[in-house]
Image (cartoon, rainbow, N blue to C red; front, side):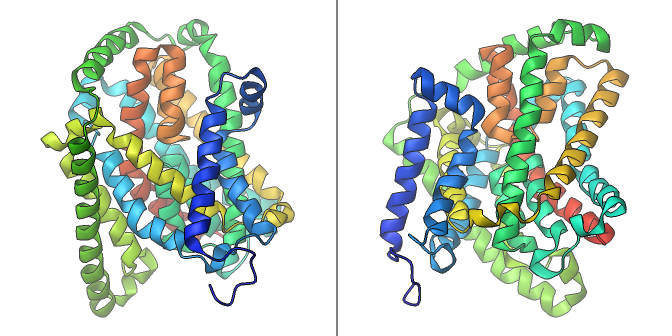
Length: 416
């Protein structure tokens, strides 16, 4: 960072600052202090994890563009966290839950995939400039990162950022659109919990399946939970980073091969090493979920993965200049249209299959919010149901890269 004019250019110092910020946010957001709890009821923790590092860049304390921290986080920690988060997905257990929660989850996914292109079409009819732009400033590129977040989570969002390459300023704006629109919908879902009996009656749903589900998940959680030993932690890290190494090896060979023999596939991102890195890592995680390695979730695999995600989130935030957030106010309306389609589709399908409100709410939040908020919402119904949110949200990580990539291609096709 020799050419940077920032106050601090040493990445070791910057990394320590970012971890200190994350520690501060996590500590205060889990505090019992009445004022802090009230503050975080209005300001999402995740938003602060992006916003506070962005202040370092905005005021010239650090130079996010010239730091290598994002590269390290995206190439080493991102694939590792995808593996740690997906190795716990239990496809057999999801099947045992019945078809309704899975249908509602997949409906939410389809709502995101189709809602993005639909929002672009509607906005382009109203004002083409809302969703226009060219090159890295093309709005559809920024929207692909929202699709990654809304189907999977932060890891998939970062993957779409790398695959479709929106500008850092556009990405910063889309992060804000993502969080604010998602949190507004979260508020409505939480309000609905207090009226779940009336909503279930409206849907003509039998909620006894939720009770049986609660009992199953209590037994499942008890069977895998354990206090992790040093060996457990070392094995989890060894598996995650060995698989990351294999993913890099595969990507380094597959992408050039396709670029040389089928260059036309570049428009589908199939010549991108990063795309193959993420796909291979996700696939390895799914394969491991069918082995005994998945029991390491009980030792905290997803917690380690979550730490990696938040480090990545902080390094992304460090690249953002908050002074650019007012450049595209119309994008919040586009995000609202997108979310509205997702909600309407969920309600229609919920009425058709008579799904309990719990399945609708979790099916949505397992997409919109992922592993960070789905278990929180599930626990609001009953603490024993929190693992259900995790289970479906982790499944969202599996679909996030593929679904967001497909959504991105469709948005590219319909963008003005």
